[in-house]
Amino acid sequence: MGRIDELIKQLCPNGVKYQSLGDLGKFYGGLTGKSKSDFSDGNAAFITYKNVYSNLALNINPDDTVKIAEGENQRTLEYGDIVFTGSSETPDECGFSSVVTKKPEKPLYLNSFCFFYRFNDINLMKPDFAKHLFRSQNLRRQIGKTASGVTRFNVSKDKMAKVIIPLPPLPVQEEIVCVLDKFTELTKELAEELTERKKQYEFYRDSLLSNTTGAKMKRLGDTCRMKSGRAIKPAMLSEIRDTEHPYSCFGGNGTRGYVAEQSHHGEYPIIGRQGALCGNVCYATGTFYATEHAVVVESLGEYEPRYLFYLLTVMNLNRYKTQGAQPGLAVGTIENLVASVPSLDQQRKVVKILDRFDTLCNDISRGLPAEIKARQQQYEYYRDKLFTFPKDEFEV
Image (cartoon, rainbow, N blue to C red; front, side, top):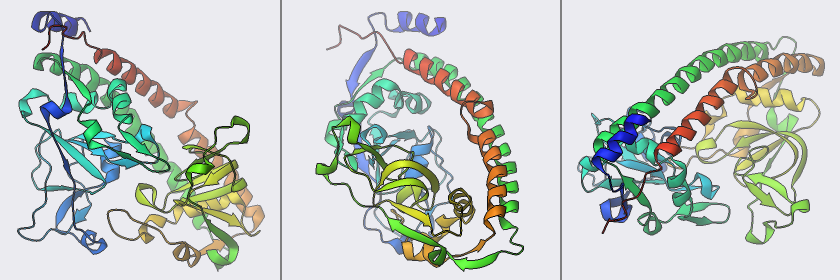
């Protein structure tokens, strides 16, 4: 940290300059005029919402594609662009950033649910500096205030233009990048090791669940009740602590807010049916409210709920989604899928084994998950500390 402090004193003794995004560049939207069919067997690279949300530095070599006609007038991403998610289920998750830190070798087209920012002067900020800066606590706090909504929050570009960012000299930016990249690289290595362990877990899980000896094969619609969640109206939002129930776009334990009524109580597998979580499966326990973005799956007696969760997880439900910028999964499609129904005793044995594996791979209180969490917290602490610059009081 001493080197960074020395550079700041040397290069900006009066403090670091701060300016609004609106003064430094412009915002641009993603693709326009596309239909679902355009996202099947495309001829150009397509940047998804999930790509933006999940990466500090944008993955510029995605497998996702979109059809672009010759001469079609669509904007493409360039080196240095800062991409933002345009909407989310909570204001805290709106405007998540990802930066184009390498020069694209081919045109990159952005989904319509995201937008991007481009500096007027590309030399003003290092892209690798921007990837850390725009996820720092101060910037996230400012960006969160630009979103409004009830169950779906959308970012206002006009308000985003008023977000204030620091502009330290490039040598300061480079030094900060060196420090923070070391943290993220270590976290990446640990995450890769955890990924290998999860592959082992998934191998054993798939082997156990594929052993259908003596099991009947039945439609899920004949063994389970599929219930779509309901939209939340403003009047349902709770302000009374002792009567509220958690809700989210996905339902269950992924709390996104509170409502003054419940729709489910017990233990159920939950299937995401829209957007980036389409086809994903989680497990809900207790009292909760499921929104229209979720499907609650209730066993009619032939499945243990926990076994059903594991079974749905390995069925790769994402492959049955509709194509498009905002994919969806129909309840009828899930009901018509055929799955094995082992005896309840066999199901309980499988659940006991898989729960142990799941704890080893996913319990954040122990092992690699705990170490990764600790490293991430350490990175966030130093990131936010490094981005707290003395302000240039003589700035005009």
